Length: 102
Image: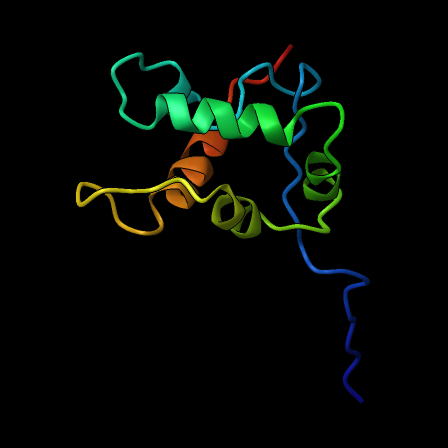
């Protein structure tokens, strides 16, 4: 008889923000680059998402909305320099490099 152990949930990665686990904002590599062409539009959309009146950030942090949903709903126009998944890939990469708030 083979014993099978089933996980109670799928593996997940949690990234906390606003100074808890890291003080680095999402898309740090774009927001810290004053010459990046997407800096202004991205900053404006993030201000909308994280405004006190928006439930979007709470839904995102709770996993109700995915990062892919967030990027798609930003509707930031990407020119020919960027692939359609640029902001999603950059978010993933920046999250991997977030500095831990010790």
